[in-house]
Amino acid sequence: MKNMNHPEHLFYTKSHEWILFTDDTTAKIGITDFAQDELGDLVFINLPEEGDEVEIDQVFADLESVKAVSDIYGPVNGKISAVNEILMDEPELINSDPYGAWFIEVSDITEKMNFLSAAEYIQFCEEEKELGH
Amino acid sequence: MELKTPLYDHHVALGGKMVPFAGYSMPIQYSTGIIKEHMAVREAAGIFDVSHMGEAIFEGPDATANVCRFLSNNVTTLKVGEVRYSPILNHEGGFVDDCIIYRMANDRFMLVINASNHEKDMKWFRDNLFGDVELKDRSEDIGEVAIQGPKSTEILARLVSDEDIPHGFFTFKEKVLLAGVEVLISHTGYTGETGYEIYSRREDIVKVWEALLEAGQDLGLIPAGLGARDTLRLEAGMVLYGQEINEEITPQEVGLGFFVKKNKAGGFIGKEALDNLPRPEKIRVGLKVTGRGIVRDNIKVFAGDKEIGHTTSGTHSPYFGYGIAMARIDRKYSKVGTELEAEVRGRRIPVEVVKLPFYKKAD
Image (cartoon, rainbow over all chains, first blue to last red; front, side):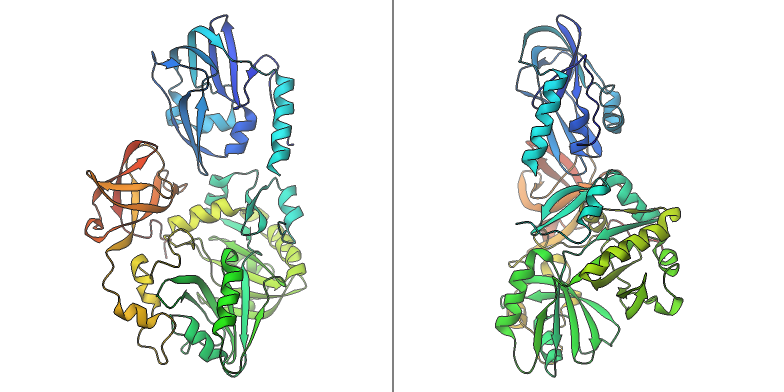
């Protein structure tokens, strides 16, 4: 597998979101380097609005690459306190800086799914790659 | 089992994302990405491995009569050294496939057919062959690369002499030496740009690829995958088998009536059916996405509440920076400028009928 960057201080999901906790009940969410590389050039994102609820395993955004559309799933239950609207105009930032290009910030988090650590996520991606071939 | 072209290892080394396509493992893109690969072809040049394409050779005293019967376009007026596009129709007037045909000699032709239809086409030819003709399937013996883009002639000129370059569009030169390899070079393509398709013995295609890539590097030539091939042909308004055309669709329904020569001597398979068909109700149009989002294939198209057809191909256009699609819709909504809607994942996106092709290179 090509050199992928998966920072240690983030949590990860099997649907390829990353989660950065800024305090116990607040987190930013984006998609991983592995995910952006798999999707290819990103050209559109549909984001929810500030104040919307996010729920575990529910779609909160979708992302269009030249090749395909992908759903982005909520890794926590909570309320959206900020939306990174720059991505609406510059979705390519997700390709160039996947960990800087957060999608949403969620506050008042009441529940979290079982996250993967960076090491667990890397192993999961390797298994996915092998299955794909 | 998935087949590999001789360039498989090169694709992997270039960061190619390999996907199954028509029985082959082919690169959908390289590490550069579809948008850059696409724009390289529009602005400089791109090189594609198209060794998966099928090649059928018709040879013998009745070769001309046979290809005339299989193709709706006229072949009798095709000169040696010329290439022509043609539908291959079934008895109902639908597409068995589409192809380009090369006249190598008075009694010898090469038909380049879609990889996805290769087995079906060969059976169709064998079942309907007549007279004194030999049909050979050379698909496994021939390799092919396409070099496409405004810089492609300049790159080619670094490797072969000027008289070996087929300057006329839809002409070709045979038995040309390129990097020590015997090749056929044709001035054809599937991108809407100028460019060449180059054929060699299968095992030699690696040398052709390497020589072209090296010769064109400083001019911006990069490898491009199937993803860019699809976005380029879509911008150029070209049909793809399985998307715009299939066994059920006639040339008239997709605006390819020009390639049906109903009055040619001897007729062709499908003619009788086409003669008896009324003017089609549904036709192919281009759609520009005027709202936010991308309209892909098999998306329903509406005029108000009325469903009037569906898209057959659709993508984000790297050149224009917005979504484009081709659709099969009721004729009465096909006028350029008509505002329609596409239903994408439960959401209506505004689209507008525009002229095909979306992209046309400056002359």
